[in-house]
Structures are given as structure tokens and as C-alpha cells.
Image (cartoon, rainbow, N blue to C red; front, side):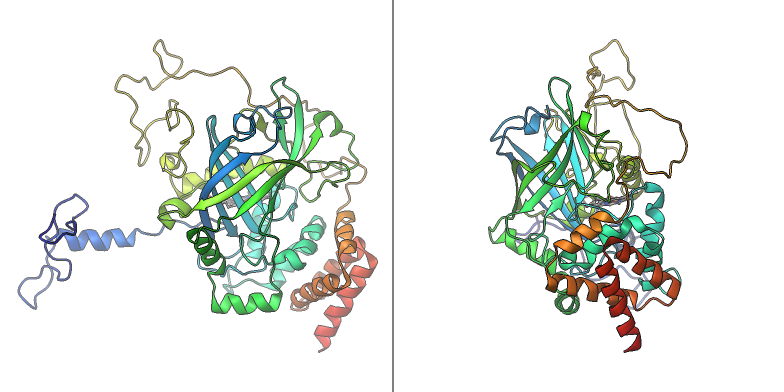
Amino acid sequence: MSQSSKPTLTTEAGAPVADNQNSTSAGIGGPLLLQDQHLLEKLARFNRERIPERVVHARGSGAYGYFEVTDDVSAFTRAHFLGEVGRRTETFARFSTVADSLGGPDAARDPRGFALKFYTGEGNYDLVGNNTPVFFIKDPLKFPDFIHSQKRDPFTGKQEPDNVWDFWAHSPEATHQVTWLMGDRGIPASYRHMNGYGSHTYQWTNAEGEAFFVKYHFKTNQGIRCLSSEQAAELCGTDPNSHQTDLLQSIERGVFPSWTLYVQIMPAAEAADYRFNPFDLTKVWPHKDYPLKRVGRLVLDRNPDNVFAEVEQSAFSPNNFVPGIGPSPDKMLQGRLFAYADAHRYRLGVNHTQLAVNAPKGVPSGRADNYGRDGLMATNAYGRHAKNYEPNSYDGPVETGEPLSAPLAVSGYWGTHAAPQHTKDDDFFQAGELYRLMSEEEKGRLVANIAGGLSQVSREDVIEKNIAHFQAADPEYGRRVEEAVRALQEG
Ligand code: HEM
């Protein structure tokens, strides 16, 4: 302790710092000395403060809370954390925008990430979803191109309508999600006022080994609230951190946001003959086929103490499953099972799972128990006689022999398969259904938002291809978009 009641300022090595205002110099006006450990350390550390931002979803906000089971779903999954009504599991959530870099405005027209980490007693379960039930593409091979087209252009350094709409012109499967994004729900008023979706189909397996396919829906208990394009444009300028402020302040005030989780459940045997591919991420399952079943509620009640340590360094990976939950053959999901942990090794290093926010704190030992060792920044110290190989003759951790989820039969020839698998696998019918569900006012705003972007495109063939997609979804939809684009071009 210093002479005051405040703690002593120290160097990184813990030694007391005598002067934090004046560098050590040779004489009163002289040059600075290399021996000034505190100065060198301070400047060098500052140079290393930034790490690579997430390649997508760079801008986000996080909070802790819990998930509580309210309804019995044990007939469908043996996941322990879902196994009993009333069971609570600590959870960390990170919400995000997608396209812009760190520092981008929160109120952008963009999907929102809805990533959850459940610290279960059987390991971390990560559900890395969005606020939209569908996505723009259905093959992970297209993801880097898609993202390049939506982020800043390498020459102009800004998002370009030419690129955004050119990619969509070549991706008819995006029509459903584009309709969603350009509609009223395209700009949530805050992270609290939006739903979350697992989006993909996942697999649940019960204690008897029976498999089910499921889709997750987190419905906001705050009610859905969205911004118009005009409101959002203003907010992006006046309060670019609007979503962060809203979430932080709401939790600080003790107004804890919550969501009710529902699932749609499809018995595994029904998947093969369903009228469209149930693993196609560009489609929803109609609720009349698979109604929502309530599971529990997510409550966020604690802000992180440090945004960098806990939010920036958080790492969610769709391949973090627990017994009773597994992947489906959704090709996009399969691609994501690789992409995230790989991104984390690059962005945070191989030992990112040892950081407090990412460690499996729900398991009895509070950490991973395996034979992975060393690497940059390893902090897990295993017991002094712990072996670093397996199998061994000692008492180190051993496998369970129980697969996490049910096996899935596959067949066919390897190759790149462009042909649809199911009879109703066209790219437009659900976009048309979504359009026809909208009120006249909603349709008007949707068409105006699309035309606002599309009319800025410099190539006529790109405009026409996009109009053709809306036309294929619904002739009226296509006609109205075309009229609105032409009016803006002429005006
Ligand atoms: C973040 C890849 C599709 C939701 C990321 C990151 C990568 C990535 C590399 C950054 C991870 C990090 O640095 O921590 C991909 C690929 C996709 C894909 C390759 C398709 C093949 C999707 C889909 C969804 C989604 C379909 C939602 C349903 C998210 C979310 C984050 C994210 C929420 C931010 C997670 C966080 O808050 O840390 N994605 N993504 N992504 N992605 Fe994807």
C-alpha cells in the first residue's frame, strides 16, 4: 500500500511505480532512458491491446444470466440441463450485428447474432443463432463470397449496393431472407426486443436412443420492436451504441430481459419424406406441420465486468454439443462446425477455452479434462503426476463409449450435388408466403426498402435478375419492386 489508502500502482512484475506522470530523462530536458521499465512496458503493452476482430459479427454486446426449464422435454432429449422442470443453467449471451466492423452502428439494417453458451454440467453447449429463422445461402462454400459482397469493398472501403445486390442476383435462395431483412423486422429497436432462432435444424436424442430433429425459437418477452429506415438512420448518427446502451442499462436497472424457448420437433423418420428438405437453412418449417412446444426461459441478469475480457474474448462454436444434442445434415451447419473453433484459434489462440468466459465452468472440475497440453498462454495446470497421453495405466480421464447423439444413415455417391433432393425445394415459395402474410403497409415499406437499395445498383442486368427473384416469389411483389425501382431511377 502507498501512503494514501489507495493500492500501490505496480509494473507488470508487481514492483511499485514511483512516477506515473514523468518519464525518466537524462537531465531535466534530456532524452529518455532505456532503463525506464515502466515507460517501455506501458507503451509496448498499449501497442498490443487490439486483437483481430471477428471476421463477421464484430460488433456485439454480452450478458450473463440463466436458462430455466419450465416444461418437460425429457422424452425428446437426454441433455441433462434440459432434463428436469425447474433446473437452471448459467448462460452467457452475445448479440451482434453482422456486416460492419467493430465500431459500426448498432441500428443497422442487418441480421442480429443471437449466440448462447450454456455452462452445463456435461460441458458447454453453444447455440449460435440469429434473430432470423432462415439464412441467405444453403452451402458453406458460398459463405466467404457472400460476406465479401456485404462488407466493405476492397477499393472503395465502404459497403457497395453493386456488390450486395450482385451476390443476391446470383443467389436465388437468398430471396426469402432478403424479404425478411428488408421488411419491418430488418432493424430491431434493441437486442431485447427481438426473437432468437437456432435457424438450423439440430438433432435431439432421448435416453432410449430415439432421434428427433428440432428447431429452436427464443421468443422475446419484451415484445418485438423495430425501427423504420428513417428512425434507424437518425439513431445511427446520434447514438451508434444504441443496442449496447439499452442492454447494459436495462440490466443495471434490474429490468432483466427474458425470452421463452420453444422448439419444433420432427421425429427423425419423417425427415426423408417431408415435402421439402427439412435441413435447408433458407426455409422454415410451417408451424401447422410442427407446432411450437415450450421448453423454458432465458433470463439475462448480469452485465460483464469487462467488455474485452468477457465479450470480445468470448468464443461460441456450433460444434460444442452435449449428450442428447447433435448436428443435422444441414450443409451450412456442417461447414460451421469447422469454421468457428478455427476462427477462435486464430483470433484468440489455441488456449481460448481456458479463458474464464469460455471455460466449461459447469462441469465438476470447472475445466476441460483431456490430454491436450501446452501452446501459447496455457494456464491449466494438471496435477504433477498427470499423464499427457492416453490410454495409460494411471487414473487419467477416459472415454465414455456413449455417442452424444444418435447415428444417422447416409447413402449416395460422393460428389458436388446441385440437384434438389425434395420435390418442393424451389427457392421462392416461402419468400412468396412471407410477402403475402404482410399487411398492405408492411408490403409498401418492404418494397420501398428494396427499391432504395436496388435503385443504386449501376448494372441493369443485376437489377433485372433481382426483380425476377421477387417476381418468382409473387408476381405482385416483383411488379411493385420494379415500379418502385424505376420511379427512383427516373426521379
Ligand atoms: C460469427 C462463420 C453462418 C451466426 C462467425 C464467425 C465466423 C463465422 C468465422 C466469427 C467467429 C469468431 O471469431 O468468434 C460462419 C460460416 C457460416 C456462418 C462459415 C456458414 C457456413 C452463420 C449462420 C448463423 C451465424 C447461419 C446463424 C444462424 C453467427 C453468430 C456469430 C457468428 C451469432 C457471432 C458469435 C459471437 O457472438 O461470438 N461466423 N458463419 N453464422 N456467426 Fe457465423
